[in-house]
Amino acid sequence: MRVYESLRTGTLEIFNNKLRSFLSFLSISVGVISILYSITLIYSIRTRTQKALEVAGPGRIVVKMKDRWNSSSDMEKKQARESLTLEDALALESRYPELFMTSPMLRKWIQFRVGNFSEWQSVLGVDPQWRKRGWIYKMRGRFLNQFDIDTRARVCVIIIEGGWLKKPKWLKFYDNKDRFQEFVKHEDMLGKTIMLSGNLYTVVGVLYEPPREKNPKAFLQVESWSPKILAPITTVQRFLSGYDESEGGIDQINLDTGRESTINAYKARVEKFLAARHGGRLNFLEIKDYRDIIKDKLADKQRDMYTVLIIGAIAILAGGIGIMNVTLATIYSRIKEIGIRRAIGATRGAIMAQFVIEAMLLGFFGGVAGIMVGLGGIQYLASKGNEDMIMLQWWMPFVSVLAAVATGFLASLYPAYQASKLDPVEALRYE
Image 1 (cartoon, rainbow, N blue to C red):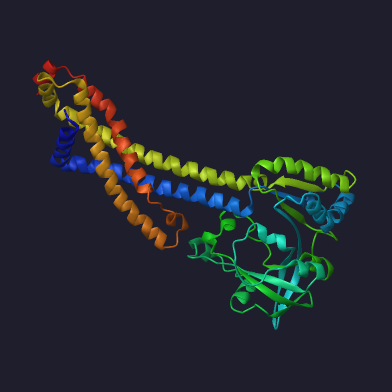
Image 2 (cartoon, rainbow, N blue to C red; image 1 turned 90 degrees about the vertical axis):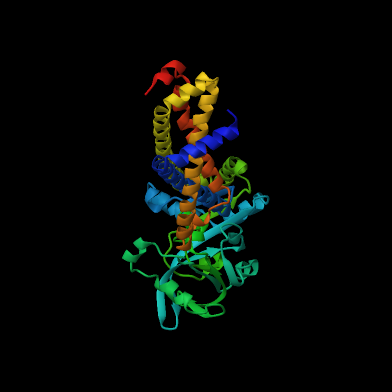
C-alpha cells in the first residue's frame, strides 16, 4: 500500500471512530503538554545556570579565611585574622599579571545615617577590579576608580535591589521589609552626603540590580545577601570603624584565570606563592574553585532537571499506552479486513505500515492539540511573570509534536506486528 493511501485510510479511520480517537488525542495531548512544559523548564534551568556561571567567571578561584569556628586554636584564629592582607592581593596581581581578575574584599558592619534615618548595614571594601565579574547592574554616576583607592577617598556606591517582577506567594507570609532598601529606593542618593560610622561620605554611583527573576546570582542563590554599600577597600581598612572578623586583614581575594581549564594549575601556583609569603602556614586559608563552592546548588538544579524530565517522560509514556490500546482495539475490530487484504496480496509489511501510520497520525493530531493548549498555558504563565516560561523557544513545539509522533510509532509496533502475523484463512473466518 502506498503511503498516501495509508494516510488517507488512517485519517478516515480516525474520523469514523470519533470517541475512540478523542480518548487517544486526550492522552497524547496531556503527554505533549507535559513534554512542552518540561522542555521549556529544562532549557530555562540550563540557560540560567550557564548564565550565572558566566557572570561569576569561568576560571573563578576564591582565596578566603577559614570561618572562625573552623579554626582549631586561639593562636590559629589570631593568625587567620592577621595573615590574609591587601598586600597579598597586590603581590598576586604583580606576580600573575595575566590573570583576568585579582579582586580583594573586606566586609564591615557599620552604621549608615542620612538625616534622621539610621540603620546598621554591611559595607564591602573593593577595588575597581570588582566589576570585572558578577556585573549585572545598570549604573548612574560612576564606579570606584584607582584614584579612590590610592587616596583613600571617602566615597561610596550604593546598590539598589531589583525586587520582583511578580512576588511569589510565599513572600506574603513574611513582612520583614529591608528598611535600608526602602529608604534608598525612594531617595535620589546620587551625589548625596551620607554618614558611615560617623564620617561623611559622598555617593558617587548608584547600581540597580535586575529583578530577581532575571538576576543570575539570585537564580543560584549566590551572593544574594551581599552588602549593598561599596567603598574603596583602602578607605574601609583605614577609616571605617565597625564590626568585622578580619582583625586588620581582608576577608578574601577573588581571582579569575579567564578559562576553566587553567583553574587547577593556578590553584597550585597561588597556594605555593602564598605559602612562601607566610612561612609555609596556610592552615588558616581556603583556596577553592568557585564551582566547588556552589556544587550543591548546581546539583540541586541538575536534580530539578532530571525530575522534570522524568515527569514529562511518564506523561508521554501514558499517552503511548493509550495509543497502543487503541491500536489493539482497532486491529481486533478489523480482523476480517486484514484477512481480505492478505488474501488479495497485501504483504505483512504493508499491513504493519497501515497501522503504524494510523498510530502516528493519532500522535500527530494529539500532539497538535496538546501544543495549542500548552502554548496557551505557557503564555499565561509568562504573562504572570514566570521567568522560566519566558524562555520558550520556537523549536520547542516542533520537538514536542515530533515526540508525540515518535511515541505513536513506537507504541504501534507491537500491535501492528501482531496484525501482520494473522493467518489470512483464519482472519477471513473471524466473526
